Length: 55
Image (cartoon, rainbow, N blue to C red):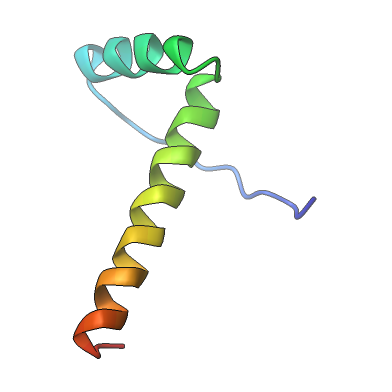
């Protein structure tokens, strides 16, 4: 597995509470849920940009 870079992420208490609940529903840690969501967003962005011919 590739080495991961740690960084600080500041979010509101309300957002964190929702992320915690969502992560629990998906049987993930909050960190795992955030990583999943970011990866999914990037995957979708790459597909969209590829269709438009942008780089």
